[in-house]
Length: 489
Image 1 (tube, one colour):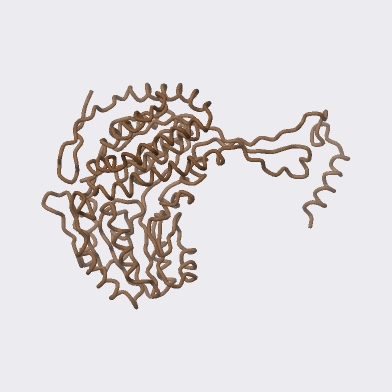
Image 2 (tube, rainbow, N blue to C red):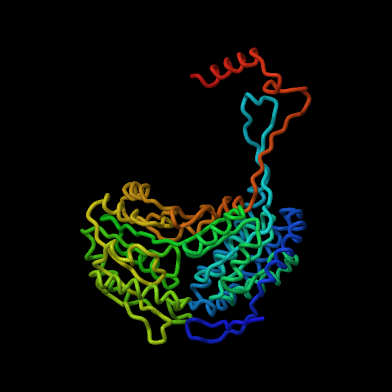
């Protein structure tokens, strides 16, 4: 059995070794998950919620330690790990503790008059075994929230964390061990792309994947051959439109956090900034001043951490070189530290849409800033992308901001804020275009892991229905009269 070293990407400290699962292990765990589903799906929703409560209590009591461990795995500051990884999971647990029973109960729906005497309702049944394939940028919360949604719905789960942040897989296993969840209900697969590929081909009942658009397409193709439904949370190239009436100080502060949080390794990161020509110079000057105050390093005293994946640095270097070759200028930053673990927060100006950095996902601490003149131009630039995950519009004129936001092609939009729509569990989350398929969070996050069953009930006292055999001219005449009366106006 092979092993890999788990390393803190910010300083190279070895966190330990982990044994990787063999290919044959996938089918063994899948069989175990299927057997556990037979029991887990039949226990009451109240019993399943009790496990959510235990998990929430554990994270409330031990959240700082969990955040420290996540920090070691990812290189992000511990406070950021607590705010962006641990807290969202606690909030999601509380949300589903309160809401899951109501969301999952059968729903009566209206029965039309031509079906008089019958009753109609909708039931929600768990799908079976859910494969959750998690990313390395937010390896804890982007694994845990879909897992929680699937488990409370009555499914069993096999999760495959990224091998880049394999240590988080151990953290997840420890938490579920602490709450004594029944054996086989939640299992972790440790390994690389070969294990992920085997999991996809082991015929789970649904695949929930978070990661790159390229990998999402591969998974969707493989799933289509087996008719396995997929949920894909993919890449983004989020635009930030700063209108003339914007609160400039707030917009600059929002741009810094939205672009540099998690070192820019966020699918909802601000990756394109469009500023109205009348406030462009003021925006750039204030942005340049404030970027100097940010603290980059590892530990509690810093704002911006390390790059979690060293492979991402090569992608960012390529995009920067392409932009500079095509006329862009680095106003601040643009360098990689000697240890090749940190990219200095960067402001890029004189950019245009011929550059890779304005078209392809960057996933790093870069703010490319471009000027616009008219509202129509800003909308056109924002929509000039194959992605459609998030966007933000900034203005003191809320009606104008809403008008612009309504014309942006994006699954999630903030006005005078950034990324925070993700923090509201009442809002469904997901992208359009190449940013993904499906929605989770809110009630959608439960229904995503359920088969929706339509049920129609008749008391069964009549011998036959009017639409059954035999057909006759009289029946047809009655039907035509009914259609004309009901639908002809």
